[in-house]
Amino acid sequence: MLKKVAASAAALTLAATVITGCSSGKLNTEDTCSFISVQVIEKDLQQKADDVSEQLMAGETKDYAKIIDEFNAILGDAASQTKDKKLVEALTAASEQNQEVFKLMAQGTSQNAAEISMKLSALETDEDSEATAYLDEACPGMDSFS
Image (cartoon, rainbow, N blue to C red; front, top):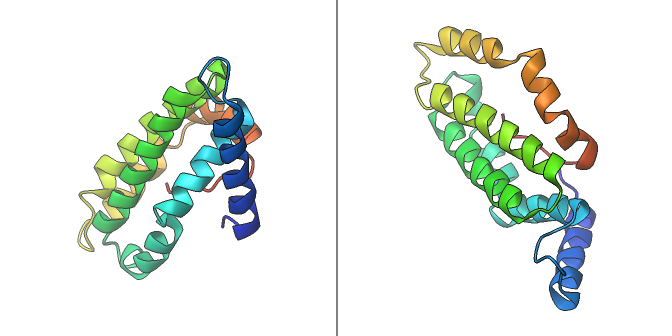
């Protein structure tokens, strides 16, 4: 869970970036991670995820899919704003993975929960983990919604 202290620090970092300006107009790695954290907090994604947790446990994944879609939009925004090319690749890979998760979860009901779960498990590959490994390194405290 993202901590309020980290959110405040992220907001201050972003504010400092805006005030001092970036020579390239792009965010550095740390500011990109802060941008993601601030957006997750501003959009209240963790609370939304908590609110649908009972539905999720019952196999009703459609509302949770909407949260993944919102998070995916944040990743896309971050990828377009960072100057860290390696992070762009990792964010793009994470976004592509989340899109697949979204598609599956958007179909989830209590009747097909086992099938959706198996399909979600099949999405977790070593290749995908390698593609997003830098994201975990660059933004170690970032929550994921998939």
